[in-house]
Structures are given as C-alpha cells and as structure tokens.
Image 1 (cartoon, one colour):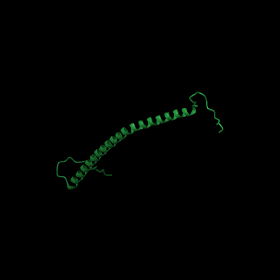
Image 2 (tube, helix red, strand yellow):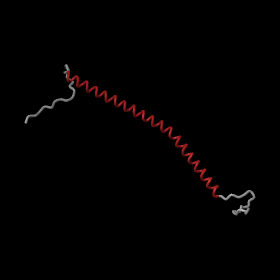
Image 3 (cartoon, one colour):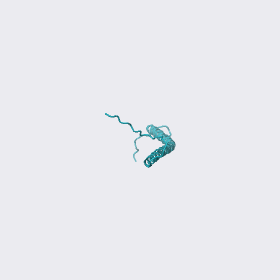
Amino acid sequence: MAKRRMRRTGRSKVAGPQSTTDALTEQARDMSVGAVKIATEAARAALGGMQELTRAVADMAAPAARRAVKTASDVARAAAQSARQVNQPTRPAGGKRRSAKRGSA
C-alpha cells in the first residue's frame, strides 16, 4: 500500500504571489477573528453595564428594606402595647371598681 503525503493545512510562509482564493480565504479568516474580538468586547461591555445596574438597584433596595423592617417593627411594638392595654382592667379615678350592674331607671 502506498503512503500518502499529508498536505499542509496551515499558512505557508513561502514567499511568492498568493492565489486569489488564498487571499480571499485569509481575508475572511481575518474578518472572522476581528468579528469574534468585537463580539467579545461587546459582551464584556454589556456585562459591565449589567453589573453597574445591579449595584444601583441593590443600593436603592437596601435602604427601602431597612425602612420596611423598621416600620414592621414599629407596628408590632404598637400592637403589643395596645394588646397589653386592652388586657389590663381600667379603674376609675377614685380607685373603686365600677359595678357591672346598671341602675334601674
């Protein structure tokens, strides 16, 4: 069985005129590499923009969350105080308890 020679698939550094096909292939390859570089740069810029937006939202959300927790705490405290006041019997100013009976009129 005869051995086949492997053709070089890489760029040849041999000096000499290039064929039109080779020139077009090289130009397309360069354009492709450039497009990938531009897409990578655009993706990095978009990621940076999203990170900035996320930080801005977090900076706005944190104080609002603190205010909400403080308000909820104040409401719970007020509810507990009013519940204590309802459960304590009220006495008239003289210190005597009122009778629950109504007088006949």
